[in-house]
Amino acid sequence: MTPSHCIECLEPAAEFLHDLGGSAICAECVAQCFIPCAGCSGLVPRDKACSRAEELYCATCHARPPEAEAAEPVGDEEAEALVTEYVGILVAASRPFARALRGNPVPGARRRDFNIT
Image (cartoon, rainbow, N blue to C red):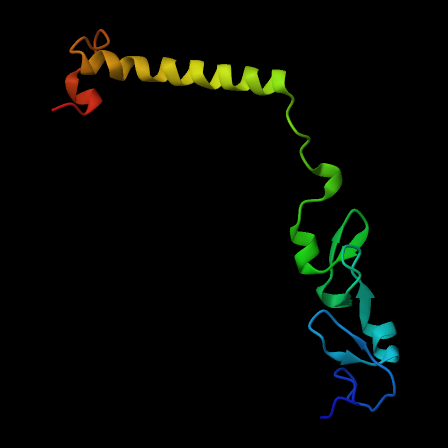
């Protein structure tokens, strides 16, 4: 097959469009079998297109998170509150292990509960 033939119908054509892989496709086959990706505008076979919010995408664009659902950056106050909460949880979780290491385990706990030999 020469570059003057459509990859879909194998018929000769004067002008071609190209799909995402760079294959030459005649205008008739494009109209019948392909749609433009809503993300990158590349030609995607209709049976391989992925839909989201009533729009069709190629697999690469569909894998990206939608901009409308993208997380907004956290403000300074919220970031400080999250860090404070995380540190508090971390300190509270490490207390029993710190007591065990000092030889003063949690009442009722056994040394083997803390994997101390």
